[in-house]
Length: 289
Image (tube, rainbow, N blue to C red; front, side):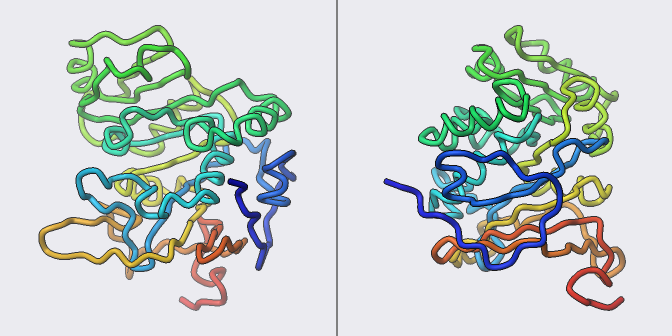
């Protein structure tokens, strides 16, 4: 089934035009990103229901696809962002939800893989982005194919405590494990410094979860957020914890994080929004301090 193109309602993007071709050009039209920035440009990608739920937390329904309704345009966008990224960064909790999946374009939208591959080739990037997994405690199953098969390069960023646990298992030659501190929560700036040292590149993509995103926002380490708003109301109750975009951090009212809207695209009843971050409230659509 052909994926319908997105309709651009508003656009003030900056950076270089992405060299999209084939189906990607038909679906997305023109998109811009800072492709050669130093330090690397850090983007996030999340999908949320209308009532702010980013994960249902129900067995068998834990993925972002359950939030978007497995919307093909949202999946195509996720694939596109992975195609331009040099490294895709997630927390261990998010990885354990998608244990069989690789953080690649091919994995999320295989029907578009020829165009994704052409995009990476044109941008001069390796065939696959680094898969970066952050785990303070080392609670990962290294017998999973992603750690053994060598299809993608994997970097596990952990602590000395986590490394001790991981060393009880074996990992393949395409997986690197780096302990960046003795124990405790790993700061976003430490993660980025490690990715810069090992993975290199100009665009790094953060896919979650909400706790990791909260850390990046708290340290002002996220440049831009791609945010899909799905036309679903999921609801909450006292028995089921359903996180929003951020978990573990409180910003407003003392230290809020603001975004500047730079694009709105529409795909049916889904809205595809882009926000540039690191902005003050005076830059966010005229809001005042």
